[in-house]
Image (cartoon, rainbow, N blue to C red; front, side, top):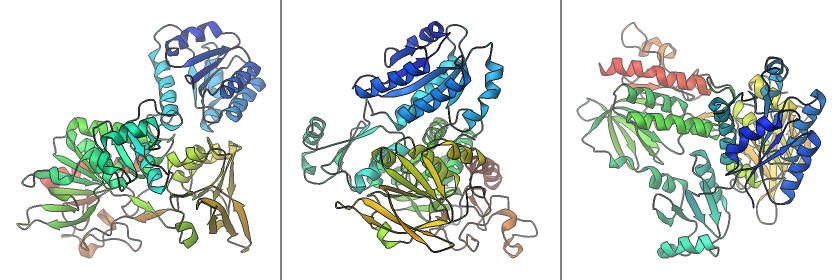
Length: 552
């Protein structure tokens, strides 16, 4: 397979754009064409010879109808490619108004002003972001940070791939008899016959029985912390709230430890593209956002440990601080932020539960969507996470169906996502519908689902090779002591939501404080939270002032 291609279509500014994209010719196959027919034919030719198309660059100098035909045509030919419209300065203001809806609806990924001279790094920064996202979600990794050796692509292998995808580690799966497989197994002779075997660039090589083992090898164990050290803040959960708290606390000089049960980024890390987050006009994936936040926190001194969920909090024997317990060791701390977020509720259909990891997935499972290219995928859920999962899956699947119990998505999903879903010809929304049964093919992989109209009770069997369940919030706080008060649904009460009889004196606790002094709560697990990335980030940042006041 040759280098991935960038196809540039321009009628009047081909020379300028050819010069602009010359810097990419070392690593991409840049093709310049002059009309919509040539662009689509070039894409067909590239695909037929085994090439991938990473990016279409479309000059707005085309006739309006032909331009929209070209946008739609390139998406039909190569749905995984990113699409960029460039506009000459003489028409940029008009184009910005004309194509604003197309960008908002996801018909194109970006509209940029055509460079007016050399070294337009603002332009190239945007192009780099588009290529970066394509490489992270579509391209086969050139360098594999993690190699998984197994004779069978089973449920555990898919879980390991999904974890690597969520934390931004390029990974590949290889058969033991392949060249890469033999090379890795030569370094792991003691693990022959126990699958999968995992090798990482960090130097670890061995049998990997679960995702936690991989996380431990990559990021270490909490018992590596000196037990005599009492840190200022332990953040439990590395989603948006926990990451924001880690950045702000450590930047202000607080010794900070962040514990994450799974992947840094939490559920937000599975979002393929967040388009309404402040400061990212072209959107950013949850994985990239989490990576950047983790890098910031590390720079200021936060220590991260993943793969060890908190199992409890207790008071130190002398009563001077808290102890956060994990199966890998205890961490002594003066204050705690609980930011463990929520998990997806279970569907409760036994036949479906038996196929989890074999076509059935809780959460977005971005890596799994790539394996279902050309199949029909069903998404169950009406929140933003479900919408983002559907849009990502539509880049690979032949068709995607969103099932919701409500009549439509308007009550639970952001408008920009609804617009993008309505425009996408591969996505269908079925309201007032739920999954009641399902079954496998001959090898145990999901093959069909039975769905039911919640009003009439009528049932229908549909073909489906993938089922992604994003069913809403179930709080992850059973490990907290009973003294931390929760509401009737299990979410943690904070601030003025705490009943007056639990206040200390006549003043309510701080806005993010719980009923236990020194323990705070932020993000989705908090009762009354907005369940949005931006609001969780704000809570994580704002809790630091309360921590300072408590420590003072």
